Image (cartoon, rainbow, N blue to C red):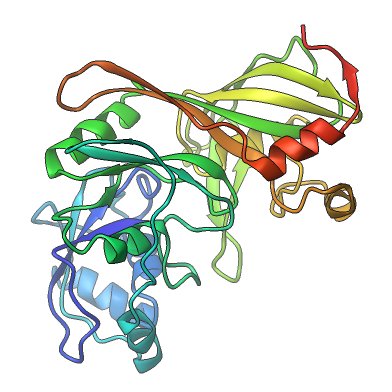
Length: 329
């Protein structure tokens, strides 16, 4: 979601907070952005503090319709939240370290397991970043550079310096990074379908849960989204794909692949639900989407860094046990 600058405890006395908008939240309306963050605060109060000018973006006044952008700093005035929410926030996350792929003074690259959110919020009290901070109390700064869906495993970057955070987030925004995932999809992916260039539209379900759909270029709320697809292996009834994203939209890979008739195995939001029911009996108990490779320029040396996180054992075992249909071409 977003990062609190100068973290405040969930104390009885509210205090001013500053939130740093990340790539995942970029493009949201300010009112929706605040409602997602201020759980337990009535909507009427959220609109009141916006109209009064108490909420500011980069120190300037903003309206409810203003779109927040990656890197924006949003000022939240002192706001009281419900006792239930405050009690939940007061409980520290259990400290946890994760497999390290690369670490130096500027950044940390970990191999995130599936089933762990990258941050707290949306019904999750804590995630990777809160657990890392708890495990490393001596760290001056630990901030997510980007995000992965809860059920996606693989490479996740964490900045250890503010300068590195800005540099790396700029690279993600300017599409200077290379991000390739491994995804197992239903059916035989057509070899000729190598580029998906379809705009995506984010919306909320009645219960407040986020969803994404393919839309038309004419949709003013549609965001251009580009996905490159390469067949890695053809399996019985499924295809293992190498998927490179040129844009980092919410649920981009999941929606793009599903909208082209080949949903990801185990995807509980956009998948083939009948197929999903059969997968656990075959040994697959999670979504088959893994952040496999990541390339970026080091924020200090500017040297190109290439990271790889191999398939986790549960995904590799599933592929190994599915009969190969034809060798990869």
